[in-house]
Image (cartoon, rainbow, N blue to C red; front, top):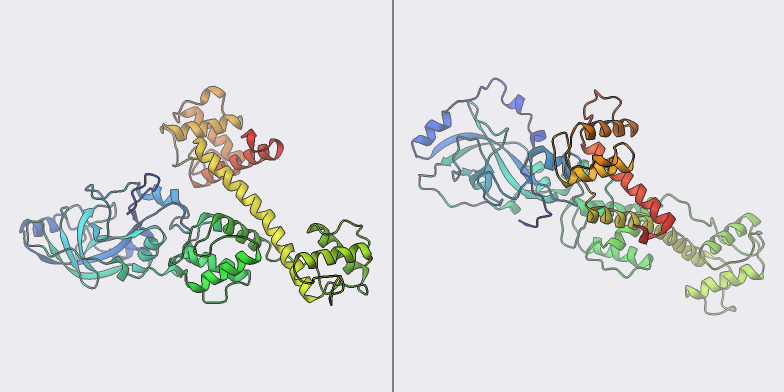
Amino acid sequence: MKTNIDVLLTAFFLSFLLPFNALTQGMGPSVGAADVLFSRGQPFEQNLVITAYYSPLPDQCCYAKGNFLSDVELNGEGHHSADGTEVYAGMVAAPPSYPFGTRIVLPGIGTVTVHDRGGTIREWRDSHRLDLWAGSGEEGLARALAFGVQRVQATVYPVASSQPAESLDLARLPAPPEKLRLYIADGTTLLDIHPTAGDRTASVQFLQDRLRALGYFHDKVSGFYGPVTRASLRSFVKDMGLAEPDDRLTERSASMLEGAYRRRDAEDPLSGIVDSGSSAERIAAAQRTLRFLGFYRGRTNGVYDDTFKSAVLAFQKQQGIVASAIAPGAGRIGPQTKGRIALLWRRKHAERVAQRLLAMRTIDQIITKRGDELQQFLSRGDRGNDVRALQKFLVSKQYLASDGITGTFGERTERALIVYQKDAGIIADDGDAGAGYAGPATLARYRQDLRRALLRIVREKGWTAI
């Protein structure tokens, strides 16, 4: 497990997997039942209802609750389980009556150890709840979803008993990427994910989907970053004139892919071949297109004159289609020339979108570097740098007086935030749920407004202004 301080790990209990009211209908809590069994110090058999939980990481394509912060918010954050053990494959969360260190043999799954707790992990009259740590990131979430809800007759070994060795191989538990397709976060782009060769994740599926939509990937969308995906990415990179590797999705490749994808429905600029016998409308379209590509500087008059013919020839020579003016097809837009014009036309449009996306990426990095990115949801009573960043934003939008930047979320900040939320359409009135609370919708709008403000400055004054 990575322990990078920037990687926030959450013991996220997948309550959405388990219709627990239905499972436990008619079952009251079995007060002290497990305590009695454990007091004997001997192994015992026990019916268990088992689910799985995972640890969300930044830059996933998918989150169970829509985004990283929401998954973190649901159950707190940390790198360790309730007893201080760093999370690992083989640890489980059990009811409070199960002492830490209790070992449990789960038929068909493995032998695990109790190190964690959870608010919904309880005892019931005929069964006890157990939650299995399924890993981190997309793979962990896919594994937890695939694990679902399982009932087993387990053998429980108290700490004082002769315990079997711990044994659990997460790789043996399925983690199908397709389980995550319904959980792709809103607004996710290829710039938000970082698939590499050998991965089996929903991020790879996301990449394959994009390549398929652009006509570069013709295999099954499997989520496996293997030779076919590498070849598909390599073809795209070549067509876009990039010098990027195919064993990983780089920022540059991702931005161009995203740019091309957003322009995928645009019609090719030329509907057919263009020569001296073509209609004035078709010739004018070719003139506009070659001007856009930087090869034609004459008038858009629909006339196939020497100036335009020279522009076509210059394009053909630059692209290696013809060697001289006397070569067959020289100065005429036939199928091969038309195809190359369309490719470069698509490339240039993709570059324009890619530049905007990369600019927004740079702005996001500036926001983070400045400490203006909010890392948690905020409400009255909170203190710290995130509160200060929110207050600074509200001051810049003239919802809060300049002396309101205190680092403490009090009544003034709450009132200012409510007015901002109403103006932004996040809430309708003061009594709405979420009024005065900086939750997912508010943080998303906050980030959007910050981006727009900085982008406006860049366009007007340049990057040095920020």
